[in-house]
Length: 272
Image (cartoon, rainbow, N blue to C red; front, side, top):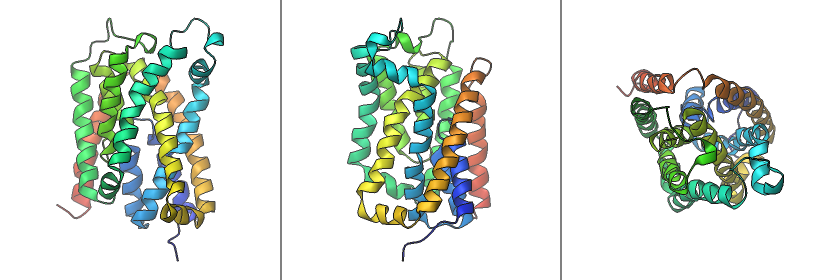
């Protein structure tokens, strides 16, 4: 009989996924670590977390609907330069690398998600990366989403591949890439959000493609529905608030938070 997830646990996991999915703190690490602490089945937790990724992706699709509309209907997109063939080129350059690498090495990275130490290493490494990128970032004269080049988009796509390691954070990796390649903070975050939508939707849909994962999800449909709704609602609020704050703060607090959290979890997990 497939393992099941309680509604209370599904609500908590959905809440954490929605808050952290598009922040540079690694939703993967937070959800998987919370599930381990709650005592949930590791494989069910991995599948549940991967499937829930679609909820924040749909929230971003709603919040940035004008951007996505410009991709599909460039003639009605106004003066924005992020539209039509140019935007599609940037989008594909940023998204295809992680999809290709993710499919080729899916089983390897799925295995790492079941282990605590790789997750904590990814969490700490991402924190170092954020602080390093912020240290060398100069806001003056930096590039907006509208002026992003194909080279910069592809570079962000390569950085995004680093997030296949659990705990690194897809948002964290793409934001670091954006800052290093010259985007301003708002543009780095927004481009990260836009790139995350197809990646998260594909990862979620892939869970229904595999028979074993599909069986786990079918046995937990009420929990999945609750977690999905919770994650969607929290992602809407979190992303909207995050974009408003970016004009006043840097990404450094997220880097320090990750560096503090990783050894704390390692110490209290009993591995130390």
